[in-house]
Length: 174
Image (tube, rainbow, N blue to C red; front, side):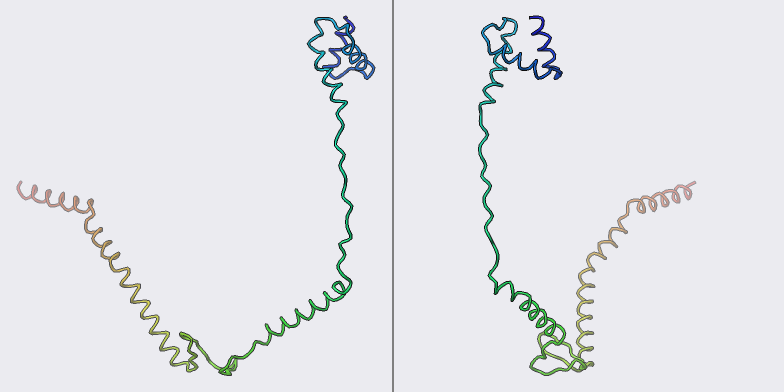
């Protein structure tokens, strides 16, 4: 019994030897377990039941041959090269539009209409800037008025003016 207590202590501390663990398992499987050790019997019984559980068998699927057809593998590099060449041509040499405007001409598009006269384009741009300036000025006008009113309604300034007037009146009365 004392020996079983020593082995149990070593088992729970993790220092029991494999032979001692076998002796503990045999002891708890037997019908001669002392009453003070009965509390450990279900634990060792669970360990034995756990051993009997078989792990599920996992089947690793066989990898299929996913090779592309021979023709596709041979032709994808030339097809990609041709597509890249066409893309470069389109980017570097853009198509001319119907009006045949050369890259040296001065052209501005306004509402979809091509204007090639620089003077007309400048006049139109000035007109648009003036309209934008007028919109901005009229949009901020109420804000400027509100700031002016706020400055006039400054309480500190009003009280300073009143205190100066009161002091002036007091000094005049004396």
